[in-house]
Length: 280
Ligand SMILES: O=C(O)C(=O)C[C@]1(C(=O)O)C=C[C@@H](O)C=C1
Image (cartoon, rainbow, N blue to C red; front, side, top):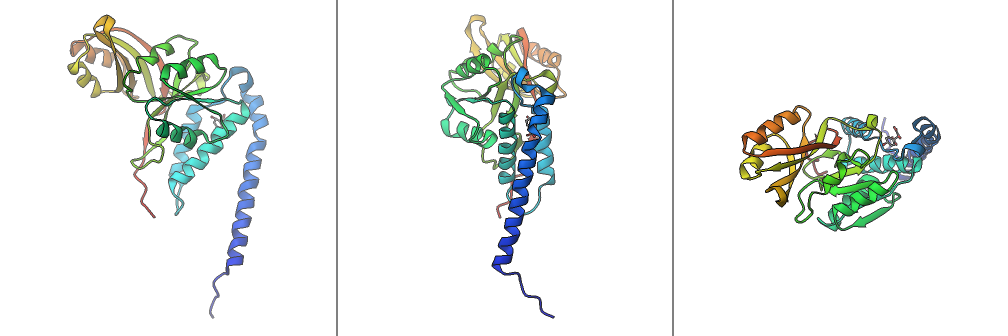
């Protein structure tokens, strides 16, 4: 007995059925928002963003994905879904520092937050920090890498009421990521919503030099801005889960630097790296 392959019309009917189901599920997802708002009271506390929950969701998404649909596509669809659902709970804007490159920062902002969330460009991290500080629940995006002349913008995060670093993008890292530019996300979110695996510290040192930089780079990622007043540097140091501030202090002292002050300025999920996607 021969079976005839399905014709184009039948296959399109299948696609229409699946599209309708997916759309229906998104509408069903949006119907939960009202109840979420009541539970989270995000209207009062500002941002509805829950970085720890999002990092965990993105990891599960990557783990269960299979088939020919590129991971890039799946990741970006879910980023837009989650960011937009955050926005409809409590509207916010994304302030982005374009001083290290307009295209790469915009790609990251659009990939992770979509087009519904307003995008506000700034020239410099300090402007982003100020805008987020003055807002109720806005997000700031700043390069998670040294930018010449940027200064120690993270000093402004040291005060209790200041926004903090709450995430590092991309959530899912891979060599060919379409929005690979490393970005810190700044905002004010409830302490219990923070991802706390990696902690980010603002550390001022004197006696800073190549030796101290080399020693520190073995233990942590960091950005250094020269601090001429103390012949030293202002550092933004990200400590992985298993490295303590005491260990870093000891390392710096051993390498000839003096630690003048340290303040916690944020935390984020452990970086999650997956293999590069194979081209179809
Ligand atoms: O789980 C929550 O608290 C939500 O608000 C839902 C949701 C989502 O759309 O899945 C949206 C924003 C949060 O950052 C995390 C997840």
